[in-house]
Image (cartoon, rainbow, N blue to C red; front, side):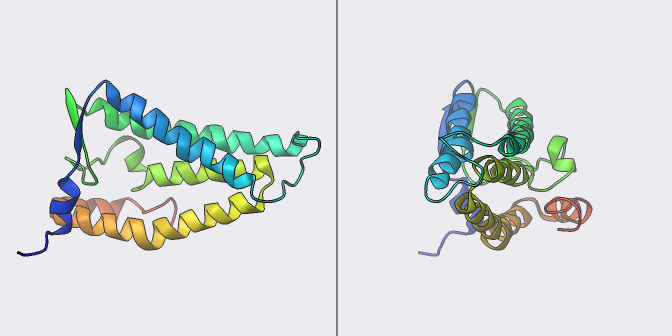
Length: 174
């Protein structure tokens, strides 16, 4: 038996009714973008905190959290609008998304998530959250995104290559 190609493996998944998608995403976003940074912050010191309260400068981080989560929500709403009655949840998209936040970055969900984690780093004053943020960035940059790019090239061919030439991986020159 021949090994499956990445695109075949990534098409596996579970089908969910359209109404369940916002609930599933809300839980996922809460776990990864809110609960996990809080847990990681508990692993080390919190600069600026005293008597279980943040200093006034720590609250600046909440601006980045709100910006990051708002951008994340924009990505999710943009995806949700394209869903039909049910959605097959898998690692390969049914179509190439090149509008909305995907005009600014090929990876706006990763960008927005990292912005939120940067905000949590400042809010919690936590070196542990900063280390986790840097690890996430490295994992996305060197493992996840290259794998996804190969998959998208395989699935969408020249359309994806053209998109890749015109829209940057992150924002700016990165």
